[in-house]
Image (cartoon, rainbow, N blue to C red; front, side, top):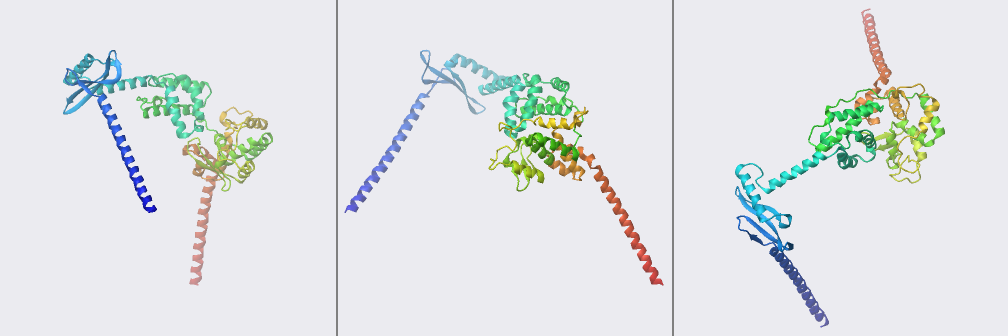
Length: 451
């Protein structure tokens, strides 16, 4: 009996709950329907005395003593109903103004001249506005608001340090405030002239013009500029400013020993560059997460050409990194931070002091022949080629994007090439001797047989 009473109560409760749900849903529907009805009521269209022109009144807003009116024009064009919305009385649209515009549109459709609809007119006005903004866009605008943020997103902040420096020093003073559409080859020639007077190498000037070319290409891709790239009309300076100086084994040993006495940190960086061919910037950016001591490799990201590559450690380089490694380094922790724990910006002057003490640059006037930190990378490649390493392998180890950059080391392998030819000549002589022995042996056998 008690169970039956519970079941009955349960059924009653369940029934009551369902009724409540349906009631709530019904109330919700009624509320939405009423709201929709009110909205529809608010937008009742009223005819005017002119065919196709109508208006609706704002439910609350007034213009003067009357409610604010929104005018619209409807017409059939080529079998399609077109609705043209003019605007509110509060925006200046009166019935008389609408009639004037309607007359203009009819005239345009009749003569085929001008915009036949308000939509076309507004599109043309928008195009004019965009073109006006484009005409006023300065090189600074494109650089700071468009090119630089995109380049940083694509390549990272580190890869753009040099670009930003060159822009500030050489590009901005000449092009910064100029509208992009007004920049001509003559302005780029001025940049070239300024850089030559400033003692900049041809390669640096080429790099600067390449930056400007990239900015213009970016502007064209994003419809910020639709003219010709002015860099195409500028002659690139040509000069062989490649470094030819590399260290002998004795010079390298002496230099490392001198640096080690002055600064262990600079010694470690110098050793790493000499043994792996890494650039200074790649060493500055190296983190412990990119160091694989077990396999003796480093993963170099955000390199000069934007590609990721591997560097391979010698035993000395591996031992050096093992000695530097903290107990539990984070993956983003720098291997060679500056004194404040941040990434280094340039090589310490300790390196130059060691060069001066050893007098490695004494009497040298040509910058290409002076020993600098980059000479360590050049020495790494030179030693490899002199040891007979294939130039393609050297290209990959250095991370060159173009084989032409690696071909500068080809002359260092001349002794190896000569040795290869000599070996070939020796093999010819050996084959000739073996053939003579075989021939003589055959003659001896023949003579013995005849006897």
